[in-house]
Length: 348
Ligand code: NCD
Ligand code: ZN
Image (cartoon, rainbow, N blue to C red):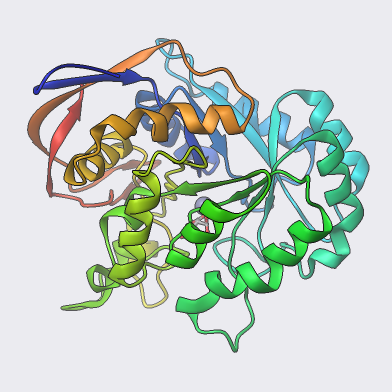
């Protein structure tokens, strides 16, 4: 990291290790906005229908690349959506393709477009074993879906009920605990044996559940896993600023049209891809930890995924600017995280 002076900050160009681009007519805006911020991104497969095969991932990747503005070399790193029926041979094909970088576990019913997700990991043992052999990481949406478990406890229960037993059975499986939100998850990842990483979103570093629920329901702060108590946010801040290489940026930027969020049954997902670096810079500055920003956004993730660290750099400038009230989303609009509010760092 070069900090030329207090006004600008130049770092290696970041990658986003958890991004939803969606498909169809919104791709043009989601791809353009993400490509301004990131060099590479792990692309989530929870389309309708989900991306469950290497063939579909290859086609989806082409649709993404077709939307790229000519002045960028953004690279989508594809993932497959694990189902009860994903055969081990699909993992072999995924590895051979060179374009698939992870297999995503959505416990069935855990979040947006997860109906086809895994009902029990015991249905997937052979496939998980093949992933362990091929060195392809399992990217976990780490929440149980048992209706008896309170929504605020679902991540912590997942650690004991799913994550620990799975890792005992397959100790060499590479695991990414996605978008962690709790002290329990931060501590588990910090202390665990073996090959584990975790992504952390800007919203879980910046906000607690009061932002979602005090003074009315604020649907643009609703995402899954849901925002938690302040003590959990503090634990995440500690995790990302403690010089631990297991934690890296994954925005979980998950756009939904304005009307689908501001709704009697509003969708889960915050849209941050348009200004994620600035959001993360704000967090690290608030923690007096700007020296860790580059590790978190540009080095730890590639090292975990066995990718070369980017050679390009970006520069952030210290100046006030206002996040737009809304952004284009196909023929619709999406409300970005912190719409209309001011940030103090701006990507040049
Ligand atoms: C994501 C989405 O909308 O696809 N929503 C979210 O709240 N994060 C799905 C997910 O990653 O859980
Ligand atoms: Zn997500």
